[in-house]
Length: 201
Image 1 (tube, helix red, strand yellow):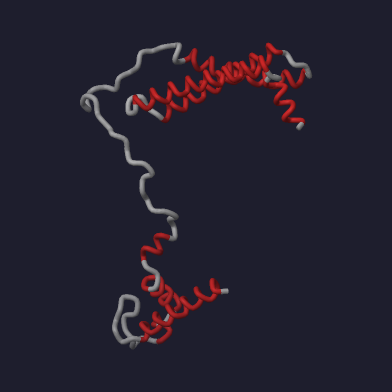
Image 2 (spheres, one colour):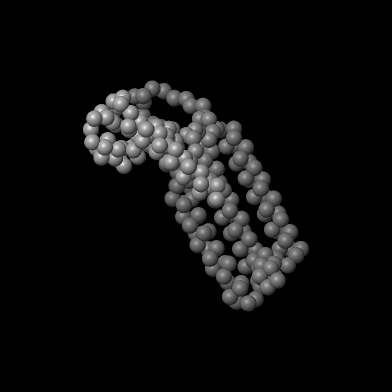
């Protein structure tokens, strides 16, 4: 109830102030003179514009279109310019291993995950070799994906030490997950059987 009454009271009080100023003898940009007819002096548009200018501050009118202040989330990283503005940008040496071969290998691993995931459940039989290949493909696919994230978001030129630390952490995590999958495959039920049991639980 209070939320309905308060805006109404505020609007009425502001309109009263604007109406009083409309009847005042002092000339203003909105109401030039008092000797004009009442209909031309006290118009709804004039009262509304006066209300918007005086009752509502300009900061509030602007803030209605912005949710938060404009400030950077993190301070900019240190920047440096190598050479002069007239020197061309260095072009890396062409390497098929880091170019087309790498891209093709990524696509093959991604596409191979589809039949490797469906085959054990569609056949209805568990094959340890298929399960091992599936675990290896998932591990390689995850490693390549996280490596691409690190390359994109931690540039080697600006943060070399951070990039190196994250790369070594990724390699360590890949080795730990690989050992864990190997132990799970050899000493437990295996990945496919575990998924089946969780699905039917």
